[in-house]
Image 1 (cartoon, rainbow, N blue to C red):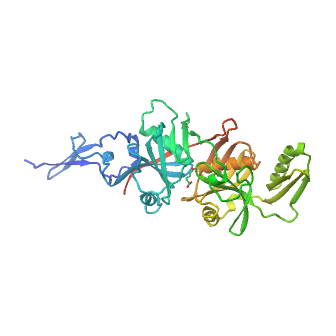
Image 2 (cartoon, helix red, strand yellow; image 1 turned 90 degrees about the vertical axis):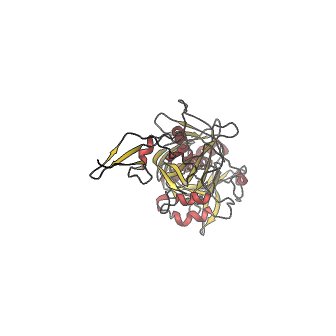
Length: 402
Ligand SMILES: N[C@@H](CCC[C@H](N)C(=O)O)C(=O)O
């Protein structure tokens, strides 16, 4: 009689199956992985697919194990490791572990790690995030869209499309649209210089709008906006070209329409309005013209860190370099605090539209082109809130040792 041996095998982490094959799993209520009976005789070996009762801990239930189970998401190429942290307000990953996980050579690779946590103060959920350098920002626009999609995977929302999320920037309300995109009420922008925060001297109503800032030996014109996290937005340098300082005599009544006309003309001939100063008594408008930014030509990794760590930004800053394509179409590149050059920044795109409106360059509703794709941004006059609409997609499901 042939001898038979039997062994219990649970599909291991070393399975050849691609990680995305776990995509059908509901991560909060893990389903058992299949168990197979292997029978071997001296002449043959067979695998029976009849499940066998097993007692080993389930893969996704190994909370005590040294593995982090996560879902990788991206929003316009701004990518994140999303962690189910709904059972605790303590992140499952330390800032040091987050930096290691985000490393694109030695880790999973991401711009940040995001934790889906239980709600506080009556909100449905709360969110925390670590940047790829391990620092903790207050908010993340692309991340919050990924978060919203992640919640729909973790929880049975019973058809609910919108919920409230507590963040370091206050209450954020995403809404899942029928086409899968996410529209987010990003709240109100913060403009008071000391709250952004920046040490730059306010130019108008405590806000820093179109102020000169020297970086790398060049004077840039900047506007500072907080979306909960700090942003410094520039449309270009203030290097006036010979003969381009224009003085226009205007009557007060005509001022607004003339200002718009000037901006238009200047855009058309590839120069743009950098600074305007109304000397009311003399009824004179002074325009200082600078060179328009061609964002594709920018040496981002050279200039970005100099803005990020400039002494006028006590909490460091994210920096957006913007080219105006039309009054409703902007193009930007971003150097993010704690993450460097990224393919997109949601809070950055919102801050850019606020800056463009404050500087008289755009309407309140704009398409903002980022290296990873476009975002629709609207700064509503009625409630002073900013609304951002864009995509968020799963990249893969995975586990990594901590
Ligand atoms: N990419 C994010 C912003 C992430 C935080 C930022 N690096 C900071 O430190 O403030 C976005 O989409 O908003």
